[in-house]
Length: 303
Image 1 (cartoon, rainbow, N blue to C red):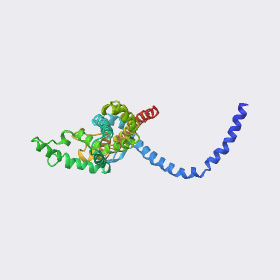
Image 2: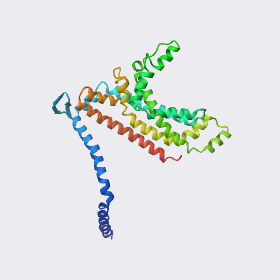
Image 3: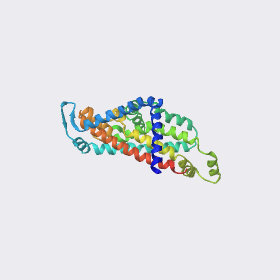
């Protein structure tokens, strides 16, 4: 009886399968899916191929298969550990932007609308332009704004990009990504029940207690989304480093993205750069999986 029912269900599923394949929507979606697969698989396949051979643009005829040698060289390169640690520090800067955004949205003060507009404006500036503004108008040790402030108080101006290169990059990146967090959290704050806040005030709760017990739990999901998206993008910060410090002094402000660029377009070692690119992809996917799991757990929790 069970066998006959299974056969009948199989016979019934075959026409349904044929009708599904003949559905016009399937034919309409196929070109875009095929193009997307080619767009992803072809570059990934070429990168994997170049990572397994010794390929330098200065010696294009030497295409010797070396296996995992490029991966070993990249992982043992003197710039890998500084680049990886600097990448993690840059990603950690997202917490600073989220904290500032959460405090801004939770606080009520005169001129908050103007402050919002000023903090959102960096979102409309290209990363290269923003980095040049910070380099030449703010951090410059002679003609920068900070140098003028230092001189006003009789102090010696600081060459930020030379003495504090990584901190300078973190400030620039935080300034550029702060508007994104503000926009997301600003939208989330619109759905916060104001009656709960008024009831908490009437019960004697102060601003810190309201922020910790009402505002922060309400912003937990938007904060998780902001942290996930910004982390993925901050893993590939490049324009700010290239425009301001060129990864220096030494490897002080080098991250993985700039280290791969240095291997590929400065030393012309395509094989090692391809291996580094695959390593960076693996690290980015691990970070994304962890953040997605954290976000999914956060979304399934009861508010």
